[in-house]
Image 1 (spheres, rainbow, N blue to C red):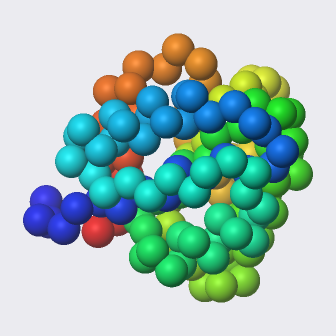
Image 2: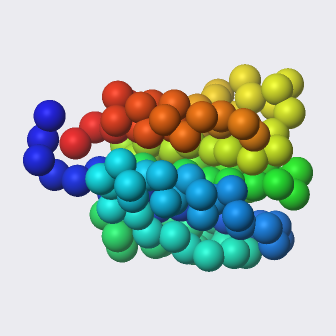
Length: 132
């Protein structure tokens, strides 16, 4: 494995005002030796993609609780593709119905982590799937 640290952008798209879970995941990733950039609340897809490109991240992790995942997650993927940055691993988490996961994966979201997912599982998934 490369000695380069995995760089992860943790983002809260949309009007969701709760970020405790995103902060817990961000800390777990940091504790696992990854570099983490947290964008804060109420990010647009454009802001997320711009930050990901500027920060040269390997992974984007989006957390959403508001129910807007079917609009916001695919928009992020569309913008990444338009910027020729669709090689970034994109994962999501939060309150996302199981029925929506296959459609999100069709749009290029690599994995969805729901409430109660062990933090070690998220770390392991990123380590095994990021392309350094």
